[in-house]
Image (cartoon, rainbow, N blue to C red; front, side, top):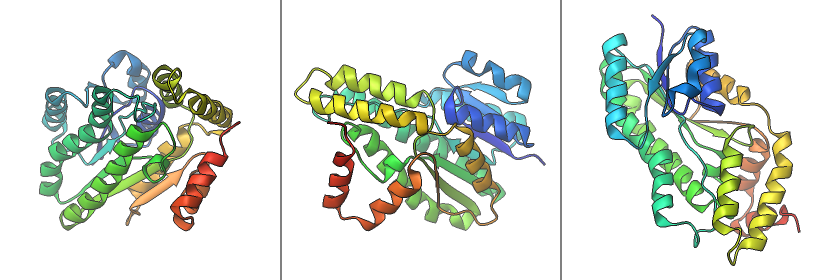
Length: 271
């Protein structure tokens, strides 16, 4: 029988490309996002579209129930919905910070709660949490984004050992730089929030530096194929990483002290 996949944040970037890749490779794919109009191009490729907002419990419950009614199971959950809201910790309104965590952390946690009963019953399942290199390394102005991804990493580690007994794997994907809408949204919010505050000079240096790196980032396909590799592995690793500077960044995080890591990060910023 075909494996049934639910993937959130499927209206663009990594989510859309993963839905496309898995649908082409024989999976029954339910592509979920707030706006159905952004996913129309997935329908001819065999994906089913699902309206879902990961900050709205009713839409999450309805979405999972609808899939269970049609398919009788959800084999793989890919928690991909997320965004980066950038700005100095002092400048970001707490309401915006809460929303960042609602989308990037609590939405993933709630969907996980909703799919686990059926996965436990069938004694098989895969939960894939899309974290980031930013779940291990924090840069200036990404405080709340990094907080959400660091938390998602910790949640995944706890969950992995809780559900292993039921034949369920928990896999973390840590993308580095990838061409997507993500960076535009992040840097627009940075300029809006901290572009005219006491942090404006450092904020502009940060934005200028990372904009020059964007052309080196690969297309989302590299992460979509990594996700497919992970879910098809007989014994998947706890973590997979790919994308611009993912490998070197995670390697240096392992070997450098906090002080040296801070110097390395700040040393990359344009003067």
